[in-house]
Length: 81
Image (cartoon, rainbow, N blue to C red; front, side, top):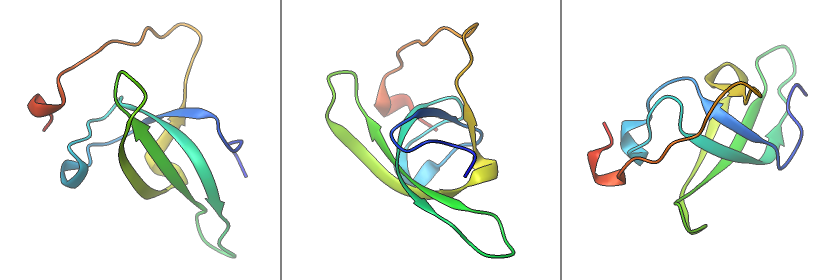
């Protein structure tokens, strides 16, 4: 497993069904190991006040770790994708 449970990650691509964009931040809430294939992760995405706005399952290649030289910013969800 490349990512620890409950760590925060960034999305590497848009997820229009959930109104999420590349770079949005999510929390890993479960790991789905797959033998001879790419592992998956369940993610929970929160709004600015901590309410859950989406739960989705992604492959490991669809997320990336947060880096110490990155700055988070806020966007309006209605303007997503």
